[in-house]
Each structure stands twice: as structure tokens, then as C-alpha cells.
Length: 113
Image (cartoon, rainbow, N blue to C red; front, side):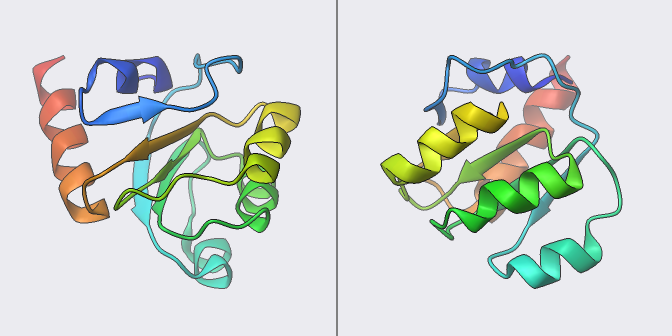
């Protein structure tokens, strides 16, 4: 599955369509503690699901070579987060559903590919 496939899931919306969506997705990881994410995400090309609206999300995404970040539960990333994501070529998405529900929706979609 690739990041661009997330565009086909109606519950998930892209907020940075200007950045490349060509990276693969090899794993999903949900957490709101960035130190925990940094210590536990082991694979590049992981998608992070979170409600944490912080510029530090982008630094972690770059550090860990994440494929994308999905903000859950209706969280919309701030303008400074979006601007930094564009600068660093990190795709950002948002959804109104919980991270647990988003993981289920993505896994269900992936099984149909």
C-alpha cells in the first residue's frame, strides 16, 4: 500500500496535497507521546496516527522517516504544522474517527487491494 491509497478512503482527508504521496506504507502506529514514538517505531515508512497537534510531530516524522501522519478525532493540524510538513515533504491527513477506528478502516481497505 502507498500513501496515495489513503486518498481512496472516504473517512480520511489529505491536508497537504502538494507533497509527494508516493512512499510505501509498511506499518501503522498510534500514539500521542512523541518520546514513546521515537523509542518504539522500528520501521521506516510507518504512518503515525495521533491527536497531538504539535510542530514536533514533523521533526519526529523526519527523524523516523515516517510515510505520513494522520490526525484523528477531528484534530486539524495548525498552519505552522502544515507549513513545516510541506517544507519537509511529509503528507498530513485528518479524520473525524478515532485512531483505533482509522487503523481498522485502513487495514480493511488494504485487504481489498
